[in-house]
View 1 (cartoon, rainbow, N blue to C red):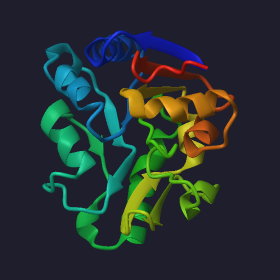
View 2: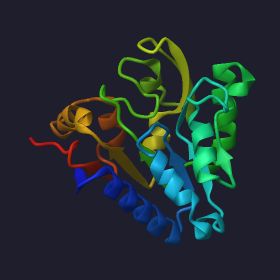
View 3: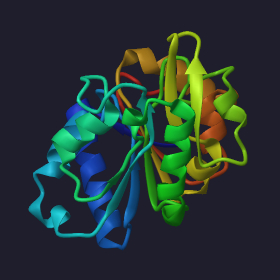
View 4: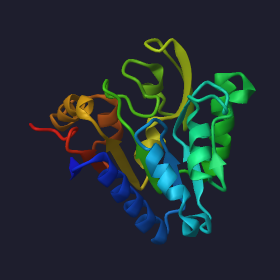
Length: 216
């Protein structure tokens, strides 16, 4: 694992912002973003950067809960509010059909595959994007995006699949908090969790705070 350990979540966020800006200045123009609370301050920080808004970047939503964009749980809604992107490829949940939403997203996203950068999170169960353990989405090898029903959440999600996540030029995984330490230790030990399957053998930088850092 290419681990980069920071004393605090704030330090991690600032370092991630610097890394993204360096990559953008070097030519990265297609970047996929995950939702959740961990990257939110990163998007807020980037959204305040006027120089960034002058660069023609295509931002892509990694995955989405099947809720309206104005729902507080919407990843796209959070990204729009914080980052204020000029161009965003998102899952159109307003279509009211998860399969159709995934197909429409795939059609719009295809010209931007492979991505330059993918920003990922990690769940306590090892999921990343909406690739949860034991779900059909993990086996979608011939799709760029798919709908998936997640039994543990009793909810539909739509998500990028494993192939485009692995095909990107660089994956950056953000992990903060003590609850993430066990799964990071499992990944380093060779476990086959979704995050491990997505990142193993391809360039991945793990940005973790000290609370989440593996000890073994």
